[in-house]
Length: 110
Image 1 (cartoon, rainbow, N blue to C red):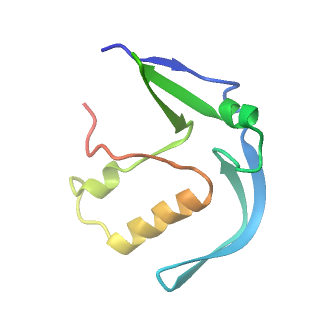
Image 2 (cartoon, helix red, strand yellow):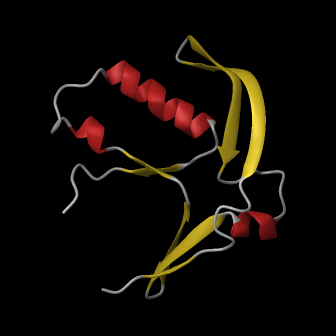
């Protein structure tokens, strides 16, 4: 199967945000202090801008829109030793809170 990838304005349309916010999940609070955040998409932007901030991957008639920045999750597969589950979940939540919404869940690469 061949896949075609088209990108739009690579790395030029990310929304940079200076943030100091607290999020609450499962009775735990997390604070991100003065962090420069990059969002894959922002619900307040126009449809055109959102399209310019994503890569559209298509394979035949199927298509999947993904964020340009992917977080590889191979570290959590256990193949590289034991990990602290809570630390891994916290890292994923920080990533998602930053507006980056695509995770690569493969446990290995060939």
